Image (cartoon, rainbow, N blue to C red):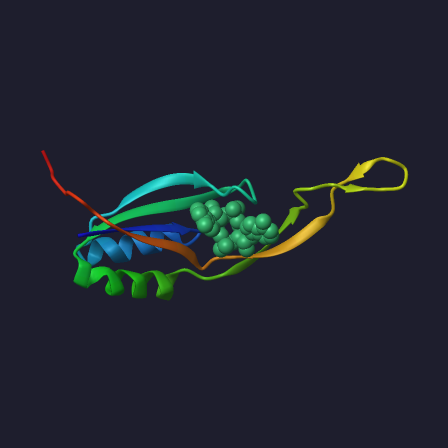
Length: 109
Ligand code: 2BA
């Protein structure tokens, strides 16, 4: 048994959850926040048999797209005036960040 932890963009999450459910995968959706952009994303927990991991990753790849987002710099620039000025930074987010971890025990009680 494996646990697929997929951090996806909020825009892609509903379609991905639908697809997983239609294909009989169990999924838990968590609201999460990215440390860099400090904006919302979605973390999905998907418990699957080892041989099904690639099928899940294929679905994630099919549905989750990368997008450009503009944010202000996390570290403000010091100008000669001594005033800290944040500047816009463009970052490419996603498609998805995926971790696959071993599950020691899976039990529904
Ligand atoms: P955020 O931390 O909000 O990061 C959003 C995007 O900002 C990242 O997209 C990346 O393109 C960029 N970024 C992140 N840290 C950066 C830095 N120090 N300097 C410049 N640009 C930076 P993704 O790499 O696709 O990550 C999307 C989200 O996945 C992240 O949102 C975070 O919530 C999660 N994530 C990514 N790597 C992770 C990791 N190693 N462990 C846990 N969560 C991770």
